[in-house]
Structures are given as structure tokens and as C-alpha cells.
View 1 (cartoon, rainbow, N blue to C red):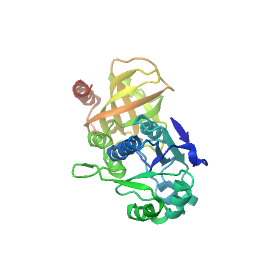
View 2: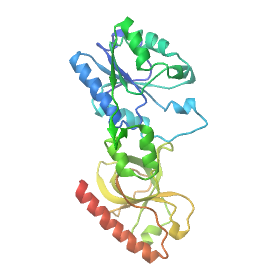
View 3: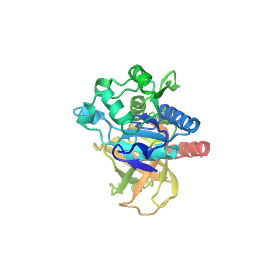
View 4: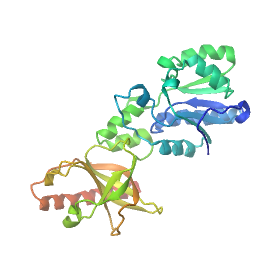
Length: 312
């Protein structure tokens, strides 16, 4: 993998570059359709595929008063793009200066002037530059004079609508993890440090690892109980259940994330684990007594085991 944190100054850095631009939050099915075309054109034209993306979401600069959660961290996004087969990634810091740059300047000074791009691959709704001037129609006119070939990728539909990062964010926030995973093309993950909790799970017979997310901008799925894989730092993996919510049975008010890992009794405080969401089992419920909660957790465990047997 070659990551560049600025636009390279040398035109000969890439051979016959085939370029795409986008934020690629989630690297979902729609993004993968773009990346697949990028690789195919690179193969046909004997060129090098290049992805230009950003270290933080442009909306943080464009709409600072309207913070948004992200599907993938910068590291997760870059790794997903690389693992799909793209070796060259230009990871830019999106700034106000960049936001105010006209599309024609970005095209002439960067795509042509510095990268010497020969081919551009764009999503059906993608546009760059100030006021989103650089859309497909605009670029097609420029391409006629510069000799650059532009390929527009059609939308990737699921459930009769185009897959998009904003749609996936809503599904995750609503706890619709199965639909979100379908739209992503991979299982959503959340990493965090294991911290001390109230010890209540152990008293119920289901000791839990309380998780403090590593990245505050990552989406935490909606409240409920989920079947999850638990990935440890040493590369091993376990099965378990994850509860997200405020534990209404005990009248808690703070939202917590607790993983009950099956057949596991090690102490892992301060270590980092990653949970991989498979499916939602149920919404969070307030029970009349701890005993009723225990019986429900037992049913949840059976449901989770059924999910694991189907999806291993």
C-alpha cells in the first residue's frame, strides 16, 4: 500500500493513472462498484488505479455546527480500499481552502497538472469543487478538450433505492444491523477499550466486558441486543452477545456497551477488542425483576447460537 498525504508533485509518479475521487465512508456496495470499474479500466489501459479520498469527512468543514457520525474511521476506510485491490491512495486533509477551490482549478491544476490523469471514474451523483461544480456534465465538457476519458458509474440499488452512506448511517442508528450489513457488503464493526463496569452481569451469571469506544465519531448502533463476533488483539475470535442501552431494568440512565463472550473467563481490562455485528436479537426491554431478565438472557443466548450456526 502506498499512501500519500498530499498531491504528488511529480507527473511520472503513476503510470497512465486511472483516478477516482470521493469520501468513501463505509466503502459500501456502491463504492465497491466504483472501485471495481477503476481496477477494470486500469487493467484494460495498462494504468495504475489511484483513489483520492479524505482523512475526515468534508461535512465537518462545510457544516461544523451539524456534527455527524461516521461508518468507518480513516484507518478502516484506507484498509478497506487497499484490501479491495487499490494500491495507491491519496489521503488529503479536507480544508476550507480546498472547499473554496473551483472545480476547474482542481481539474486543471491537480488532476491534470500534477497527476496527469488519463482516465476518471466517478459515481453517478459525485461532484467536487466549490458548490459541487465538478459534476459529470461539467467534466465531460472539459474532457473533450483535455483528452481525459470519463466513466460514470450507475447507482447500485438495493431494496429499490441507491445504496448510500447516509442511508446506511440511518439503518445503523436505528439498529437495523442486518440491512446495514447488506448495504455495506461487510459486517459493521466497533472497537473499544474494556473498562470496569458495575459487575452486575457477573452477579446475574453472565459476566460482561464493558466497552468504551476508541473513536467517538463512529456510529454506535441503536439500543438492543445483538449477536456479535468478538475479535481480540492476539488475532483470536469469540462468539457473544452485545447489549447497547441504559439497562432500564436497573433504572440506569447512562448508555453503555456490554459484551457477554461465550465460554470465556479471562480478565481483559484495558485491552482493545473489536465487535463484529451479525444480527439484532431484540430491542432493549425493561423487566420487572432480575430473574425475568436472566430468563430472557438465556433465550437471547439460544437465539445468538442459532445465528452463529447459520452464518459461520
